[in-house]
Length: 355
Image (cartoon, rainbow, N blue to C red):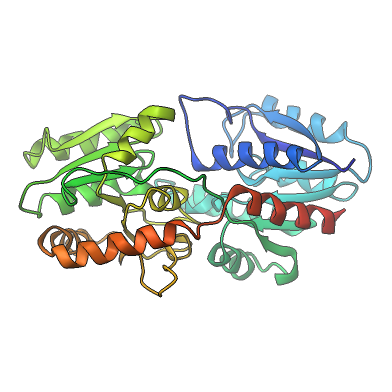
């Protein structure tokens, strides 16, 4: 039986802190087991990517306890910021680093902190036997930005589960955004845009409110200042049936992020036949894709541009024929989305090659 040691954040299964990276890690670990791998999870506690000394030393001890030649898959959030731990062990272990988001791409970082994380991540990735990104665009970025050999950087795109078609509301006015409320997800840009959109609509913002509490407070103040209270609702994180209900009520899904390596929520919306209005960044166009006839199942606008976002929303609300084309494309795309089995097969091939 093939064995892989999977180093992942300790909170990966915390239902109160859902994230795309955590869901990817869990589905990958479970999928590899189902495919016949022995997966030995190493849950790394700490405030990654900048842990305290005790958590950093605990990770060092976990890696040091692995046998020479052991195959190790490391979540980049845990490993990227500690090359002094990972790089020495990479000389005797076969290390594969999974990058959900480049560390310096998280918004809100001071320039010096971002530069330091960027340099540390570069050292970690250069020491690895292989690096895995979640989209072709993210892989190209890692190669160019960190000077990695292209042959050592691979892609294992996230999958998505089949889901029932969303009935929506009236076909137009139910707007949904699912993302942690943080500066990188740019809900402030979305609220600024919504303030410019006339007509009848309502918008639900689903996502953790405790990742950047000051930013979440700023969003609430903006909603109040624009007189949108009751039309824009911040409801916190949702999982399971509650999240399904939020998608079911959506006519249009929105993701205004400043950067995304893929955008798993994009395919989750498409799996329900819900068109997407997103930003033209990194992996989002890949996640959005095209229907078999070539039509795009959504709209893309520049990041950080509330005027462009507002214009796209107004078109959505005012042009029924355009809405129907987008909805038809979303439903056609729905049948051609990648499943998690494809993710597992891609990762298994990468791990086998690194063995």
